[in-house]
Length: 304
Ligand code: A3P
Image 1 (cartoon, rainbow, N blue to C red):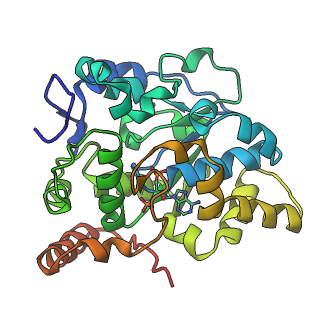
Image 2 (cartoon, helix red, strand yellow):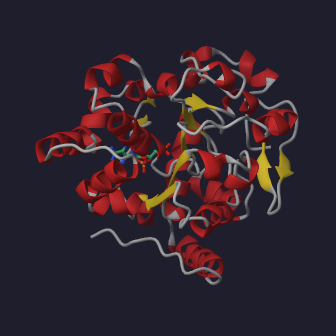
């Protein structure tokens, strides 16, 4: 009842029951059965975990640092966001364009994927288990994980920006939904752990948003190695400058996605979740983290 513009109720799919739109369920099999190409590049994080940051890095490294081409094609044209159309509903489509800013841009989706020329760049927020089983054995796949408390805050503002939630919903209410897995794509920990468990697969590049905050040059080096690309020290330094929060906020077309203070490039920080949690929520957050980290050796790096 919190989501605006959906004419049918959300559904749970897959083993832990990922919350999904009915539109996705209509096409879940089509997506699962997509053919993968060996030169495909897939970027598949949970939403608001650093997808855009990583997409820009990966695309530039694999395209000879062609900043001119990157500037002329927004990321949503360079990458096919496969489940995008399935997340819209008839009601959402009828909403005025102004309240759904992201719909002004055109997106490639799973429907267009078979016709795209190689190498294809693909974005998805679906968990690995909902993606084609041949993915990891065939393509190059990138996953970025972020502290779920920062994700919750970031997603709250993004969902309001994109008009999924009404302005009256408070962060306290949103957090309550998030921790009870009542937000699209949750449970977040299952999503992240699915990828973490596959992190030794040679085709999977698993990293943390916090790694990019702590040491972007080292992440750039690793991505270059993973994609077998060699660049000079100066070229990599220029890439790091291009990928800074300030630079991307200034140059990315996504910067146009803004409503007052709220924008797609919001804060670009780690740990700022504390500003939005009262004492009771902090306590709940600690329990949420402890419970979900108890069966894994995965830990979110601390950002200095
Ligand atoms: P905040 O809302 O915390 O600022 P996604 O691309 O997965 O939707 O993630 C969006 C989050 O990544 C936003 O977080 C956004 O500001 C942050 N982000 C995007 N580009 C970034 C950059 N160059 N440096 C740091 N954070 C970045």
